[in-house]
Amino acid sequence: MASWIGMISAVQRGPQVEQTADLVISVVTITKAALTHSAPELRRELLFELVSNEGIRIFTLESSDAVDPPPDSALMPEIEAIIKSKLGADTRFSSRVNGTAGFWISFKIDDDGYWLMLERERLEGLTGVQWLGWATVVGALSVVGAALISSLVNLPLARLTAAARAIAQGKKPDRLPEKGSKEIIEANRSFNQMVEDLQQVESDRAVILAGISHDLRTPLARMQLELEMAKLSNEAREGMQSDIGQMDAIIGQFLDYAKPTEAATFVPIDISELLQDTAREAERMLDIHVSTHIEEGVHVMGNATDLRRVFNNLVENARRYGKTQGSDFTELDISCRIKPHGLGKRVVIEVQDHGQGVPDDHIELLLKPFTRMDSARGQANGAGLGLAIVERVVLRHNAELQVSNREGGGLRIALVMPLAS
Image (cartoon, rainbow, N blue to C red; front, top):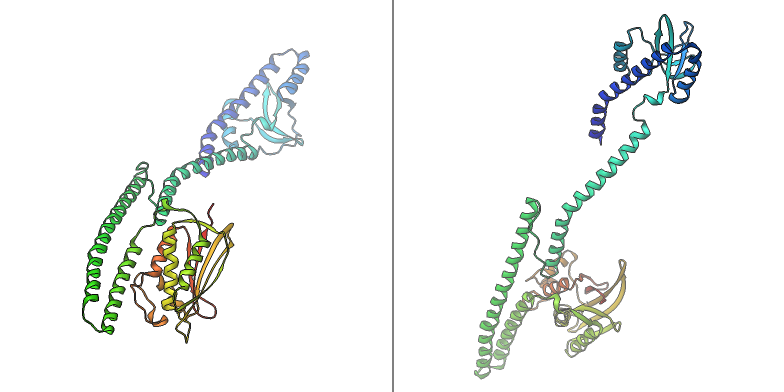
């Protein structure tokens, strides 16, 4: 805007000076010629015509006239110089004569002096209101142009953000177009290559895990069979069977952690019924007591198998680590309610035990793979992937996992999920 105003001012100055000077010179010359060559009896009618149609007034120049200085304008010195060079060096200028405002200029016919007065508006350039109007128009066009350029810049970034969010949710994003500026092309090309590499990694991992499942579980089954046939004491047999069972469970955890959750498999699920089934299965264990507060008929979008695995992991985590203090039993509370959340509603699922809990500064460590808080929650076996599996599945269901200590002791794990539409 400042550059535009400066440019207009610089470009306008010369033509405006010349135009104004030419106008004054033409008016004075034509008026002087008309008065000189008109018949004396017609001069009054001529003067009336000039005032009525052209806004030009002619007065006799008197020595007693009260004459003010010429208009205070940055262009006035240049205008005066051009006019004086054409009409004579004795030409006078004034902004007010005898109290009447206007653009006054003197001229002579023979030895008689006269004042010619023009209306000030005919000689003024752009007014403040006109400048404001033009500035508003240019400002509006600048904003429109900036918005257009911004949209062209932000659109590729919006696509990149949406694709990155899709990857975070376990979805396969559409390939980004490799066009635009050099930086956008490089970013999109790198992102597309990253997506292809991730897919290849997922494929390789699936092959490796299938090999692990076959190559490790087959020898474990053979060891289990040989163990049953071996002549061992009951204590030794039970110990070895426990070790083999733990190895098989750890292999299962690795497979569960690495298994992808495809959003394409999501369907409406009665989460209330699924939680009731989980609670009934948990009650069959001899060392756990479950109390439920589950709202009926709550539906979410998801994969039933993966969500069942999540709830089983939470129950098993509580059974192993959440023993009530001074007891060999685990008291477990399972609840499911619909609560207001932001501008809408969400399903809040809570699984709480009555154990010792964990130190507040160690809660984040629970979600890291291969981490167990044995020092805080008692010794237990496993690979430390239970809550990591839970978080992985929850995030791919576009849900939120909250881990905190329960009031009164124990661990509280909450899942905040969107309702099925």
